[in-house]
Image (cartoon, rainbow, N blue to C red; front, side):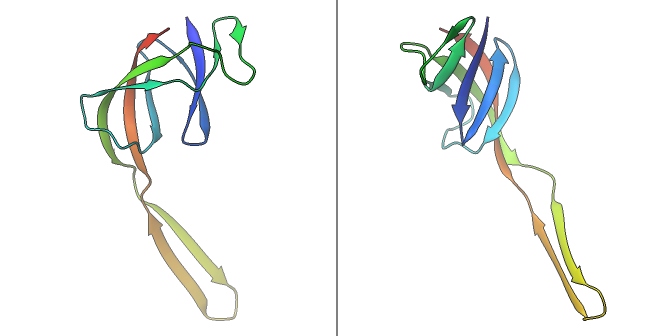
Length: 98
């Protein structure tokens, strides 16, 4: 069974056993989280959410992604700026779709 749920301003299309990376959540590693903002389950589509539906996930780890560099420069003006960014994430494994 497949489901679409939302968290962190994004939507995720998952099935049981999938590993996904979402925006950082306040949860310890090894705990379970239930998402109730489920947009669709199987062939049911919600308006905007499916009543009584939930996606249960286990938190595997919380970390930060590889560093990305943002480089700005303007030709012939001696303007150069370099800035790094590491996006925090939470890795989840989908355990149950109900």
